[in-house]
Image 1 (tube, one colour):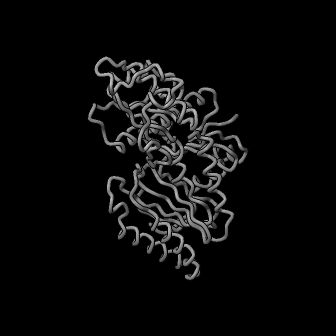
Image 2 (cartoon, helix red, strand yellow):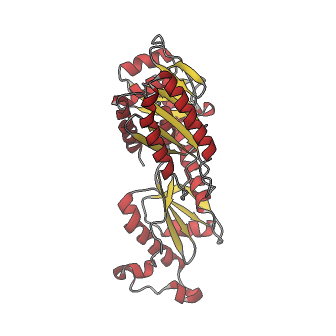
Length: 358
């Protein structure tokens, strides 16, 4: 998934602000390793009840009915499946609900405000692409797709590439019947052709190889797939490995790479005076549409200076709106990027930094 696609999802979310009533945000942790207790129902029900109590103290109690109806209907759809999602965030208005699976474990929380709380979903979408995983052995393979943190098996019964296209394979014998004389290189070449033609050339997803070290090297020599990722792989032995654990490892590699890239780009731009961590300069640059990438420290908060006219009610009480959230909304609305980083990966000691367009 390209960053452009991620930004498109966020822009669709921004439409919620145009609807009447406040936007309620609820974040719920999930445990993808559990089958029957994916959601801790007691914790979730308590969280929704707390949101209801807080909401009804601020607004007419009957207004909550529309929110509660949508929330409960969505929670009924959360069933065990192959996923590496560690949480979900719900954005709810009086007539719509948008949900995003999260690649990080959130604290159970709620908030509501006239301003959309966009930072939780920015943190989710910024670095995580869709990708394919090719589990490869000497005489067999299995392909999986990871999309929006869910894992699917596009080939329930993988085709034998030697029989998949007679125009390419009519001179090659089936290695499973050929005994020890079969050519591993030929087999890997045919697997490569099959995967590229039917998946990579169609979906354009990065393809990450999962194999033992020896077979990985042989496949890379045999492959002509431009979507095969060279700097990410997972090594396994012939016994195989848990698909969800492998997907999580690959996902974490993409996230780490993305965080390092942003930090390095900021450093480069700082040398050309196209980066700053001065808060007031950043606010002015946002108003002037000069921000290419707004970088915000995870969980950072700067009190809004609008005299308390816009407030956020959340799990811990009431506070003025987060000025950093408002900044993010401004930058996204002007087609800039917003990145949320852990404090340890921020390019400076400030809570917010920016790479400028000019």
